[in-house]
Image 1 (spheres, rainbow, N blue to C red):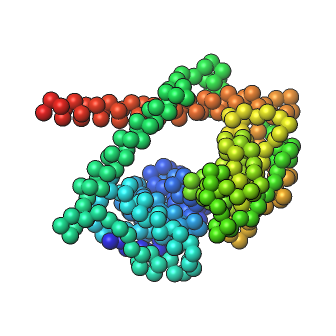
Image 2 (cartoon, one colour; image 1 turned 90 degrees about the vertical axis):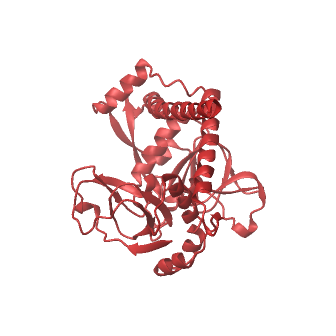
Image 3 (tube, rainbow, N blue to C red; image 1 turned 30 degrees about the horizontal axis):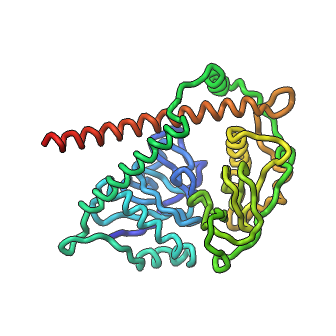
Length: 352
């Protein structure tokens, strides 16, 4: 069903100005896209309509645009024509191979992938694409309904910007923010590493357990073990530099550092700003060959907006609130469009 091929790779210093193409690397963030680029050359250009496979965390991402590749990226090409809904289905199936791919050697990736087996619905001995498309459509309808209920319950359907929020966006766009650097330990009075807990020793429960990785924001299981517990409103950074905000109590493995402050009350919006700033401060600095421990990060510096030589937390809060509304606006409009489309289909079915 698939071919797996090497990609002709190059470093990002070869990229050109433009946004016509994606530059895809082994990162698991942003669908594997490090940045956009203009035309570089024809030989290195990969066609749309396939999956990229980053060999760091073995994530499959479908490529809807022509793309260039960084190092350690494969491309997976379907041998059959797929509809958009089928693409979503097969993307999930491909990513189920992640565990087997990670457990082997990188040099054996092609062999492991080609020998893998997947289960598909069939009808009359052929792949039942109609079932797949209907299945995806039903899932989408369910999720849209859940999203609509969530937006109403959390009052997130209000995406109108306040004057302060609009000013924060304008000032940022016009480079009016004043930034300075602050080390991690000046922002967080608690910086601790998680504790080792192997998969074999994990007991099923309701405590989210975080380990290194980006899939499901690093939550690998729900446990009941009496491991070190960390409070909600914390930030985690794993050994590869993957950074996430946690708004719930959780446990963490020894490959994950946890950052919080139990003396200062940071709002969720403030913590989200700090999360992004920390992520930027360590971007691309850690990997399998150079792993991060929280004890190393005490004097790492992040850039924050300032007022009177101190972090301007009020501005951070306002800015993130504005960003959330901009994002939510698109989500609300998308949900409304999908709901209205579903209603139209139902009404047409009733009339017919």
